[in-house]
Length: 67
Image (tube, rainbow, N blue to C red; front, side, top):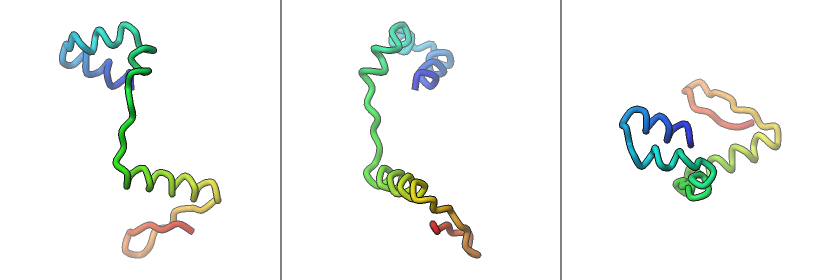
């Protein structure tokens, strides 16, 4: 996250980004990760599948399923 903020500051000259980067630990403590519910559910299902040693398999139509 700090890399993204650093890049933003470099490319835009943002004074706010510069101030946030002065105290990186405090900045990270103030940030919240936001994900759409459906995407979060997909990430959890994928993690569960990997924990159970399922592997992605491609179908003839290019779709993927877990086995």
